[in-house]
Image 1 (spheres, rainbow, N blue to C red):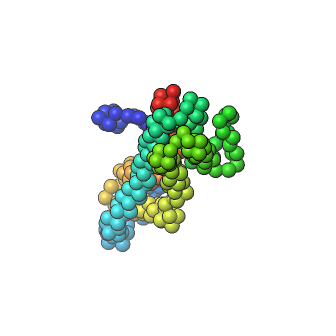
Image 2 (cartoon, rainbow, N blue to C red; image 1 turned 180 degrees about the vertical axis):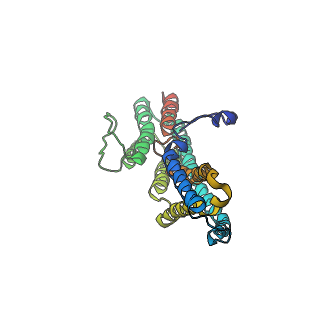
Image 3 (cartoon, rainbow, N blue to C red; image 1 turned 45 degrees about the vertical axis):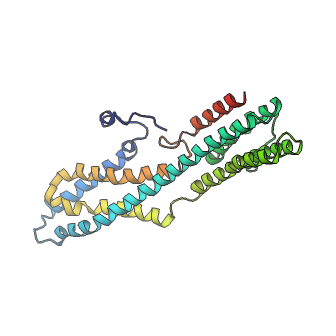
Length: 284
């Protein structure tokens, strides 16, 4: 994730970083600008179309669908941002649940059991991060044996529950305390399910494809409407319009799955490190 000071907005205008869509779109902007120049040449200098040509009336179509187009793009970026923000809230809940569980266990368990929970609570966060990224790497530990071929976060949550129930059966945790602890542990699987729902339920395919086709058709037909008024100045104008519309779609694609490695994805590594640090401070 890119960290920045939102008050220094003026410096962003002249800065190009990895998250800037200009890097990705620049070759396409050149191609579309060249296309617009070729269309302008044929319309203005080669065919010498008169003022009565029907092509001069195509701009009414763009004016009609322009409002609808803006609504579609607004919905696209808003729906993607909602997924990004929901993912951030879910991981914020994991931080709180991890801290609360550690605080409750600190006053209930002995030193050996505290070491187990000090390892497994942060391990759940790390395993969930890797599970969402499909990059899980097995960790060797004396506290828990994990089968990487199975659902790793579920195995860790199950191990935590098993040890809590063992402490309850041995009398170290009474039923009232068990009820309080179970609430935090249950939230772990709820959080995992919420993240999987975001990751495995993308924007509907038909809607996603329609937006891309709409952008492509809109941009490719613009030279036929603006060439008569803008002449060859249409080349930078069309390139800029493409940059604006395509950037919205690219940004929406990037943030609708917020658990990866893209520049605008959630800072899961930092969140996992904070959970490990804070749980360690509580249970140390």
